[in-house]
Image (cartoon, rainbow, N blue to C red):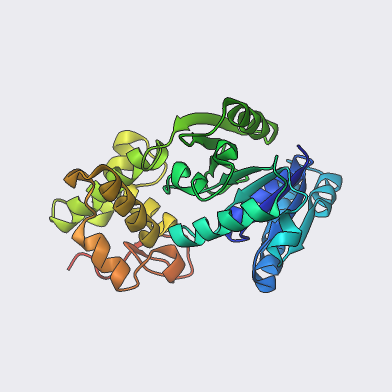
Length: 297
């Protein structure tokens, strides 16, 4: 396996392209927007420069990594020679299913098709292709160049051979792959998202304030950041989407998203990406400033 195609050049896509390219794979980075591709290459170069400054890599590695990446705006041209495709497009079921229908048509029959989805069932994605045995989840964590985990998700029909190939490929990237079965939220989000939702419920019910909730989890449970700050980083819209997947998938009321989370997403308060969530992110310093919506009166 040497030719990798990554679909989507956003935060996750450019990180995935970066780690494959740095590990010596030839990478086609595919996006419908040339502007998004240009921005992705700048991000990858900036991240490599940061690693260079910390002496984690040398100049030759930086140049070789950038040299391994080619960009494409045409899906067919970007995937026709791929041995492995990693889809990292928007976390939207319809968009992903349409991409996989096209990938099934445009790629070699032996090509493995993987998705970086954080919650959409791999079995469902595989069902729209003629190669469900070669469809698998590769759920990288953000930021991809830093985080060691890859959640490898087996769909109902995913073969042992394909699973082993992806486990080994993940190790070549310097990652630690963990094999999980295909149920809503997999493992990472099945555990993380209800914790974040419970923190939001505690805030909603007035049990404690934003700062207090996050401080309890940081100092009491040794979490590097509190659940509300983490929700802001992930994006409250993403948190809501995953809670909805858990709620619909299991039919259990314990997974119902908190009404406060629903209201914040409806109002456009999405966390870091929109400038405000549980904290304000527009003040130009590294200080944690609680959003005025939740500031102590």
